Image (cartoon, rainbow, N blue to C red; front, side, top):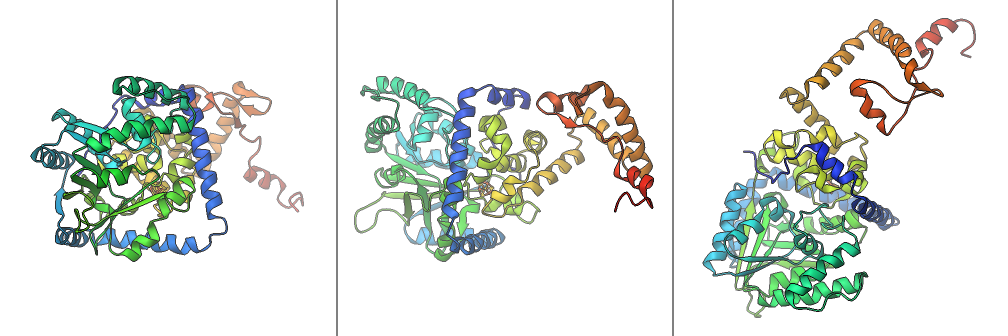
Length: 481
Ligand code: SF4
């Protein structure tokens, strides 16, 4: 069963141009993704043992996905055995309803959240707000975009498209509303000090904490969260009620599996050996008097199970590290919002049409990919992103979702090049036709559909003589020796 993802239904051209004309976004994103990629390169230098851990991590994820139903049952049993309550939601709507009911039954008024792309996917905040609850994002990046009323532009760094001046302006408005002194400056220290003071009030007043889950270890029913801020520890330990919303693909069977995986998001995403905080939650408040009184885990399918047993199954191994975004030339130019989906970059290109009605994101594999294969090389989970993008393009053609003009031109092209004679004839024609657009040996423009290609690029001219022609002319003359 297909799931549901929130979608920006404006045309790609509009979303793309919004990104391309946003100078601040392009600058901050370019420097951020460059820094992350460089950090990744450095952290792997001289750390050879990591390759074995990475491969073991890949195997652990593949095994878990292959036994998803069995692991899901076992995870529920171990969580319940420790006093937790489990729920399984087949759809986004079911997941929202489950969390809302838990909150309403407990009389919750204020919810604090740590970063979770899954809850973005579910639009959970809207649901809770519509039921009269106040929901506060406490991850710094998420808090910034919540104030800006935006969605994340990068799966790991949600506010990567904003600069410090923009963040300060948002905090100044927030400070006024919260009757707090505004940030003293727009340096990182002043901004984070403001956020710390501001969010501390909310942590202490909250009735309920909501988190995602980077991994869930089946053998002990432990939800693992990795963060670079201490906010997840506040969210999981201060409110009396805790709900972890976890995608079913986040299950791993054993602690040994977890040890292979735990470093991968930070190492590959931002070039850190390990995230600053690793939070492990196994059940509600213990005999030592720490933790929430009530602990719920909501496992969410929302289209994931439909990928099991298909050529796209490896997509479920994604650890949301963002490495594919950081190296993608399209993402670096247009930013995450252009994708019109909570998931952007190469993984968003693949997941969006797969996890929702295919038509919604069907354009992305064609328009948001240059087929450079950088994402395939960057992915620590060996997900065949470039292969999937090509498969999705084929699927789009099969479903007759491509534009007529594209069908017509590719049809002509494939017809012309299907035979050697047709190929030679088309080259002779191209040599003639290109003459009007040649400038100093380069092709600088073309009419009709091909015009767009030349807006930012030139092309070498079609050679005066092909290799075959040259060979036919020079065979036996010794010119090729
Ligand atoms: S597809 Fe690979 S590189 Fe991209 S976010 Fe997922 S695990 Fe990371």
